[in-house]
Amino acid sequence: MSLLVKICGLTDEAAVEAALAAGADAIGFVFHAASPRNVAPGRARDLAATIPAGVRRVAVTLHPAPALVANVLEEFAPDVWQTDAADFAALALPESLERWPVLRAGRALPEPLPVRFLFEGARSGSGEVADWSQAALLARAGELILGGGLDPRNVAEAVRRVRPFGVDVSSGVESAPGRKDPGRIRDFVAAAREAAAGATA
Image (cartoon, rainbow, N blue to C red; front, side, top):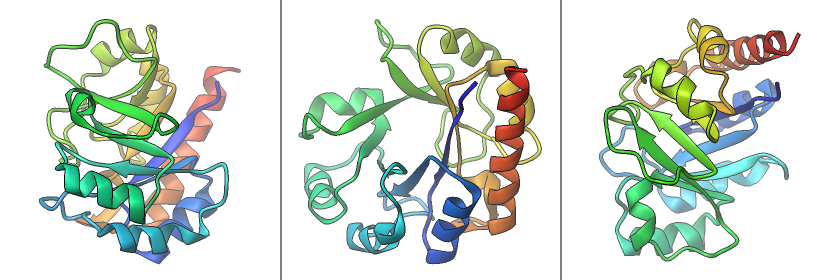
């Protein structure tokens, strides 16, 4: 199976370099003041300057205000917008912008399901492991990107059990909140890729 791998919450050049070197398919920048991974749109633009075409630049928000949305669109110009599914109804986004709605374990799910979506625990970036049993069922119905509590030690098992379209990691590859560890990024991507390859063997 081909697996999309997203590294989220990058805040410095070393982390971006490590994610690209490891072969990440998407890199997320968080625009949410309460998060230790929050960056200004202009800073995200500068960090993303070395990201090649083909690697998605993802704007990650949570209940964003209209002014923040406009600022991110103007300064950062993302390829993808990621936020809670219910947020999208109030967002003024270009039609060309890819959308990744976030669905959460233990909460009501939209009907029908989005074609592509993230599934994670109750709170983003908290390290809380999502419900893999529920995720496995949802992965049969759409292109599920699994987040929530993944790290280099458990991502292979998650891929084998859930069979997701993709995986998303943030706190699981950090040495401290908001500080990515290049070695953990490398190990995470390698473990995810190996497990995905084994799933198709």
